Image (cartoon, rainbow, N blue to C red; front, side, top):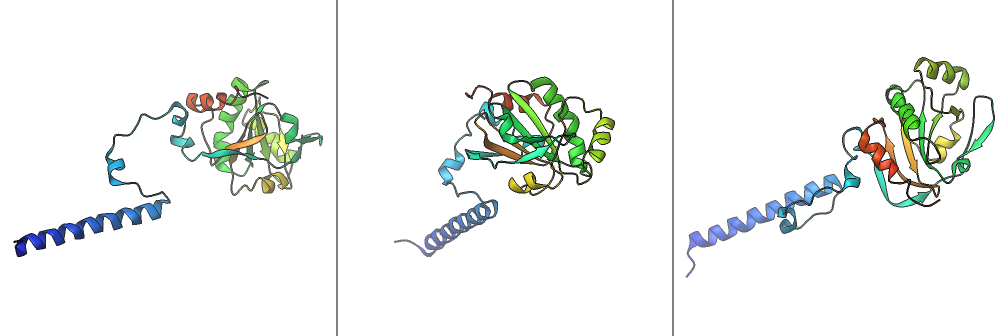
Length: 210
């Protein structure tokens, strides 16, 4: 026969197990993740893939889409008032960066964007820094001169039409677009775009056919 102590132990054990399951469920709900079986959670983690390497530090918030997404047809102007469109850069990888002179994090990352354009920008990549300053080039030009930005072309979205079309929620926001003109991911916030791991990640899109 099973004694009272044995029964109490069984009941206590079942209660602990139930509590663990409940705690894990609450944690999963709060993090937005799907609950994993306990056995899988105990298994050793596989080594990180090379493509995962840049998703750390300032780049940790980069949102890589499961599937590339179409981008809106947007237009903007250069300092002389000449009209340009995102479609003009089709066939190249585009890093579309929304920024403003009054945005401190934008200013923080601007030199690294300039270096990225200097080192990788050619037939494969264009860093398209798009200012949303309402004052236009009268504000943007002198500001970039003071920062000694020498390699980025200067484009303006003074009415924020492109920013709204892309659903930008804050500045800076950088959108990575592949050769086919599709959004593959975006980052809300600044990053060190000169970092080797981030540059290697961007280069991985150069190999795709135009």
